Image 1 (cartoon, rainbow, N blue to C red):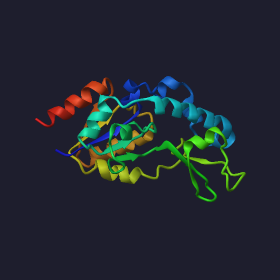
Image 2 (image 1 turned 45 degrees about the vertical axis):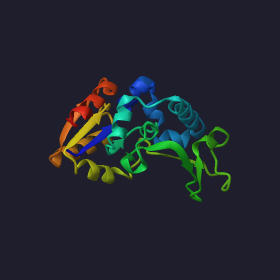
Image 3 (image 1 turned 90 degrees about the vertical axis):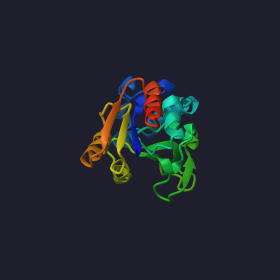
Image 4 (image 1 turned 180 degrees about the vertical axis):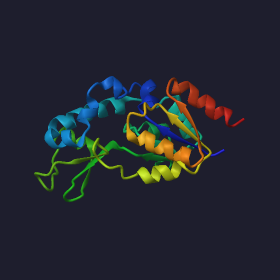
Length: 202
């Protein structure tokens, strides 16, 4: 049986990464408008998030998906699927990641950590660096790649998502429309995902 996974913030909850619901008004501050109007505060927020995610370790759900080489579409920017051992080819980070930033003028890439010192391109001086994440109000560059992935499996595991974002709805509905069975796991993913994958081996 071909299995894929669509993961949201809930899959990382057992790793100590707060969900957006738990972080109050964070959604409003991860918007294109907030980035444009408050870039310094925006990067302070993201660097705070990066501190949390870099300290976090993958939990049994991430690890089980990696061990089974399950292709994943993740809405998370925490990088925990990669930490668990899933490869670049196995994971579509549909909302990007906190690993890199780039200059929208000269296209130079930097590690995200440079924004702790300066949020401007060292080459273009006055140009504010762009995070490699999809903000609220942005289009989703890898949406079609994600739809193609989940539409060509037998079972899609939707793990830890509240369906608050349109991304989760688009991707899961595309799978359903393609005749894929969709199973939703929103609680105790760290226990249920390894069990489900083990059962599919038997």
